Amino acid sequence: MPEPLLVVSGVTAGYGRREAVRDVSIEVAAGQVVGLIGPNGSGKTTLLRVASRALKPWSGGVRVAGRDLYGLRPREAARLVAVVPQELSAAFPFTVRETVLLGRAPYLSSWGSGSEEDWAHARRAMEMADIAHLADRPLDELSGGERQRSVIAQALAQDAPVVLMDEPTTHLDLRHIVEALQLVAGMARDQAKAVLVVFHDLNLAAAVCDRVHALAGGRVVAAGPPEQVLTRRFLAEVYGIEAEVYPHAVTGRPTVVLQVPGIGPGR
Amino acid sequence: MREAGARNGRRRGGRGLLAALALLLAGSVLVAVAAGAVRISPATIVRLFAWKLGLAGPPDNVPDTTAVILFQLRLPRVVLAGIVGAALAVSGAVFQALFRNALADPAIIGVSSGAALGAIAVLLTGTAGALGGLAVSGAAFVGALLTAFLVYRLARIGPTVHVTTLLLGGIAVAAVISACMTLVMSFSSQSVQSIYFWLLGGLGQRGWGAIAIAGPLVGAGLLAAALFAGHLNLSLLGEERSGQLGLDVERFKRVMLVVGSLLAAAAVSVSGLIGFVGLMTPHILRLVGGPDHRILLPSVVLGGASFMILADLASRVVVSPEEIPVGAVTALLGGPFFLWLLRREQREASAHA
Image 1: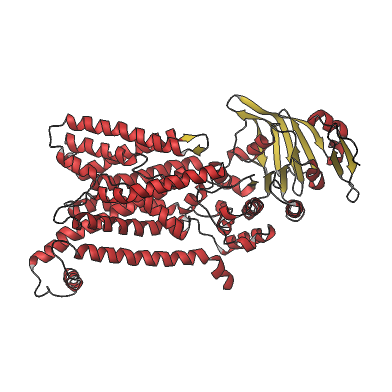
Image 2: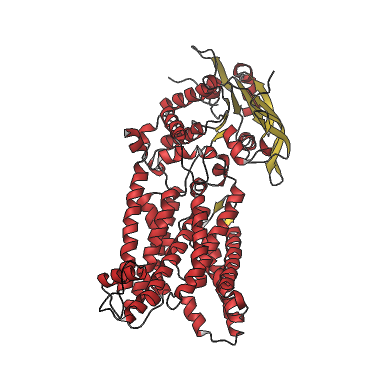
């Protein structure tokens, strides 16, 4: 059996002397969406930074498409791993088109002019992220949601087999959340990418992920299909909350319904 | 075809901008060689050039002195002004991308002072020897490079460059360097008045020799900067993001600090301290043509050269027959611009906070 596209094995990492994640192993195969969940400060973003070559782990390693990520040159790594950050800001305002085309940087010369193929990738990415109509607008004039979709398009244009996303739905309204999740699922299903996504919203994680890994205190405390991980007991132990978990009426996927202590039934 | 036109919208706008700037540069050169104590008519200029290029015989009714004024005094001065302006403006554009800050400029961050200290040390100690002007440029380069690395280290806290640390770091470094220069000068037996005038920035009496030194250095620097236009664009997204998109960030920063310092040093070693060109030119042209360095860098070359040629023209005709240092002209224009920009940056920073 071939090695999964993304293999994070036994990673321990941190900042300065402060350890943020310990001995974390995650595998994401082609065509899979894997979610990273956990409370604030549990190490999700740190792990994503390790997997994106931005933070060298103290021990353990990251393999992408069978190659050691930290042994690659930055350009080679960027052709294999695309990252969707939470926020993107340019020191001086690029247009949406220019921003998305920068996603082709790992394929361009240092002068930076794109070929017909690069333009085609950028165009397709803008269409997929529903921002083609904004192409000539400066990034700093867009709404938070439009900017976030531009970032997603930039990463799509990168055309890498592994995609890492840090809460890609934070600034989106409901319609665009659904569309973004459709994009995420489509990347795995139609383009056979390996997608690792950090989610705060457990219901969104449950809706699209094949598996979720839950982090707490920098360690993996649960891993498996959403319906096995997302249970009342899990929510009580990891998040310290009382909540109900129901199967979704249509999809059957687990749905977490919060309950605010002290507030009883309405009228 | 329609699509190709749409996607190239800004690039085509960029071509229009470049054409306009090329016209501006040509006009600036023409006016600058024509104007002065002795006015030379455009027709005479054309005839003299045709003669010099071997396209026509020596023009009639033109005194020999006119040819000397044109070719030995004004033309080298205008060409040198163009080279210095282009170098300072591109140096500013490079530092602004590197620091991700519109307030960076070789003079403001102290790099020009570092170059001046290096140059003065060689000029006053007379260690230039047989190498002459090249040794001055080399020492200026070393001084500029050391200052650039120092200020970069000072200004950067974590992944971001803070405006306050950048500006105050530049001021502090420039103050220390200025003290060093005074020290060097007070220990020197040579006349310091020429040094003072040089420090104020001037382009007169440098001649073709200065062009032979600065020209190739600036040409190399401009070429190097242009080769990295795409990487400069990428770097505007910040270190982490540009790294995720494949930029070798550490190597890029080192190369760009060297390129920015080389350009500033080449300019300073032949013209002294001339500020604000590197601040104003990229900023204004970015507002017009956008931040894409593939358009910004060539337009900054043309715009910086034009700006400096016109500033130098003003420095010698406004109080003719006296001259004011060209550094004073650029500072008169640049100082208020800098304050306006600083206010704007701070307003935006507080709006985003």
